[in-house]
Length: 215
Image (cartoon, rainbow, N blue to C red; front, side, top):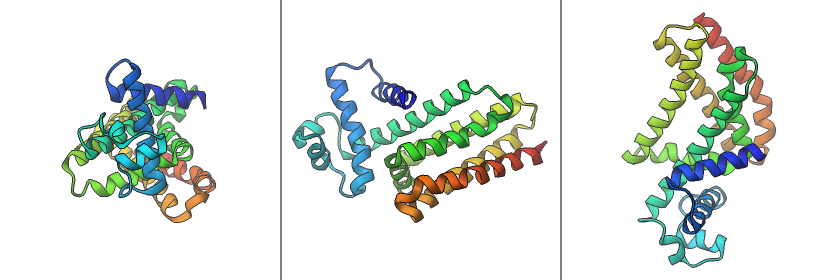
């Protein structure tokens, strides 16, 4: 839990792009509540007013920190992906068994989905919104490419020298894990934690099989 708290704080600093001052700390708290608001009541009902109610502050005190509602939602999305990226990197750095490195991202994503269900719900909205919103689509494409490049680099260090094949494996692994997470959340509701644990090892085995086929 302490690790995730530290990751969350680092992610907020990255999103705010400054060392936190008093006003920045308020903005950080608002961004976190935007995420929770989307998770609890949905994107359509998330507004300056609904976020303000959660924090017991006025609508104007929320709106002060953002250009408009879209800016507020974009910062919430950036915050989530920063949390997930930093936690994944932490898990990669902490692993002792180098043979398991290519599987770390899958485990990290499942851990994060269990710990931060509101983050998953925002990401599910993001995938839908990308169909029509160019800014969000460019952000998501870049975020996914970053994850693929990370896994491809790990595979290369382990002796898999075909970059195109490494990227392809990373792409399928990414799709397996996030697709499964979305499926669990949209199908099993409050049972998401137990269902993700049931599916963890089959998912990891699929990725392991993809990698072994490449060898």
